Figure 1 (cartoon, helix red, strand yellow):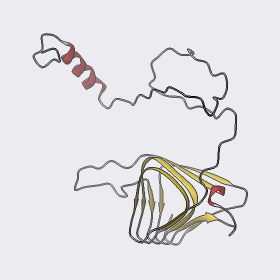
Figure 2 (tube, rainbow, N blue to C red):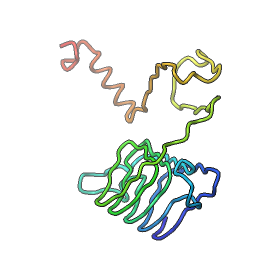
Figure 3 (cartoon, rainbow, N blue to C red):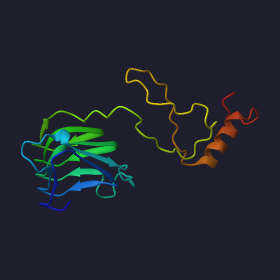
Figure 4 (cartoon, rainbow, N blue to C red):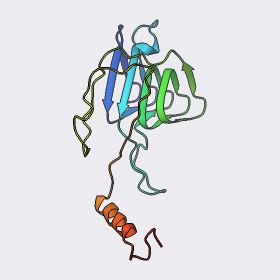
Length: 183
């Protein structure tokens, strides 16, 4: 969003999903159109991860996926769970923030207002996981899980260098190699 731009939400609740990033310029505003609307009526979810730092002296700009500019203001429940949420000096927020890391400048005013709306009961959907190698259909989907149920969850992240990992595993598993774990 450019400097002095506005994103207004109509009454009745608005759910915005952003793939990539949210950057608000100086004095930009994100807010419900009605003065009596609450932050929970305007939810924004940002998917994306922070740009890679090339070296400690050279960075890609901007360095966060969510950047709230100087004197910018938003009234919403904003979530960015994959990276840093950054607010410049004298920015303002009314609502709720859910982020991996939150960084605020000087003289930032944040007013907490009722949080994210509770999801409705029932099936919430699913996401296909790519690169999963297991036994499919071992536990078929039979319905929603009770809110107070304990769930065991295992999450695997993609390997950056699969051939390097295989070589390392082979090396540490070789009893003859002097750098193996058995020595």
